[in-house]
Length: 607
Image (cartoon, rainbow, N blue to C red; front, side):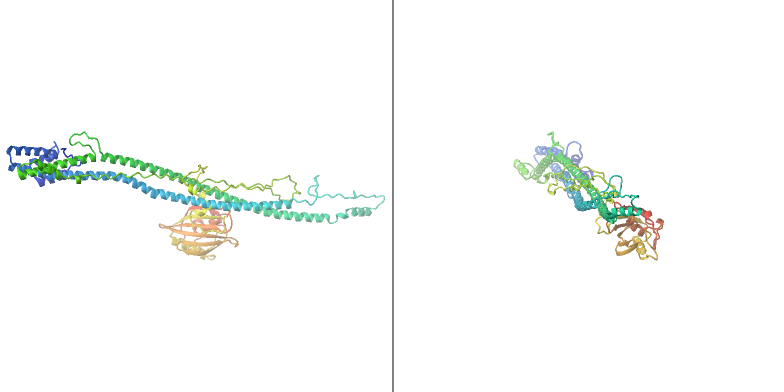
């Protein structure tokens, strides 16, 4: 039989406790503390000595009986608990190493359900914004094309009116005059035959047909010039409108491309991170499974007694053999004590009663590796800007300043079809990468109206599709209640306690709800109205002011009006303002006007 080799030896305290419960006899002392051999080996040696003594005397003497009892104590109090303890330690080792494999799977599951899902949700949000931008581009592009069609109609009418012929002008240096040839030749005078009065009368008769002609032609020219100027003015206004719409649609295209680039960057990052996580998961599995198999075995054995190898399966076999050997020796010792002898049939009976089921190690089955998920998010294609189509407009009657043939083109504008969004069913197939652009700064992004509307402080809204506006984020060295009181005091104090330093406009407080104030400001001449929304957020002992002003009519350039609309309600004496109830220091953390709008504080203190 092989001896028991405990990979987790008993501690000194446990060994001492066991010895104190058994005996201090030399036999047990030697069995536990001897460096030569194991407890099972010592047990076998002493059992052989007992057998030899009984064979010599033919009976169990009191001394032999005492030795047998001590050997039985060694079996039940030292060897058996040590085997069971070693079994429990190896079972714990197997489960501990196995849990490392399970931990790899659990970590990857958390990644799939957490970070990967959140990243994909963020991508969907960005792509939704990209799609909304695309819809706005289509809307603006349609308006731009309609504007160009209307402009071309006006240009045709303008050129028809301005270039109609009503007289044949001389090109021989007469300039802007009209020369009429008299049918009767030149008017002259024969001083020998006629008096001067008679000559004048004759000449008068020759030009009589021209009576009123030049006046009528002049009136006709003036009417033509008036019509030309009228159509020219209308055409210029339409040209300006189209130019503005072109700027708006191209600004939206730029924003859309920026969102698309943001999506593409995030998509690459998500795909890369997913692949990296999968690689880490596979490496984790490979490492922990190798450690599990190394710990569990089976491992190579020298075949020598007690050297089954440093793995659980080999030690499990050793323990079962040691348990089997110990139980047979104990059984034979008990029979010696009872009958003084030992018969072969009793040995068979002893072997039949031995059970090592409780020493069987449970080896969990290694779970199948989870399939890696490599999302391919697709890419948002970039879009080109719209460009105008050529045209020529006559601004004065063409016969007055003769010009050659000028281009009057009415072909479709070079405004490309909106770049189509990838089909959702083809989400896995990535289209070719598009040209990338450098990400805009926060201020540059804010100056694009659509992007400006979607980020930063909330805005009151506007009926105008394209309008000027400004957003600010300000830190005030006061409580939000004090900031709210000061804003309301300035509005209610018009004009006895306070007036608007920016061109003397009029503020009206529309509503106050919790931490928000809704206002509108009308210009001094009463022609224009802008809306303001203030949101006050406590920041420790300070107050963060998040505010937005939006024009209510189509506008681009606002001469810093929307910025001043806000600044005049929170500025303090340090900024040249006149507080009513609370004077506090402010720090403007960000000022974000739309494209064309201004943020010049010097323009705010002008009455």
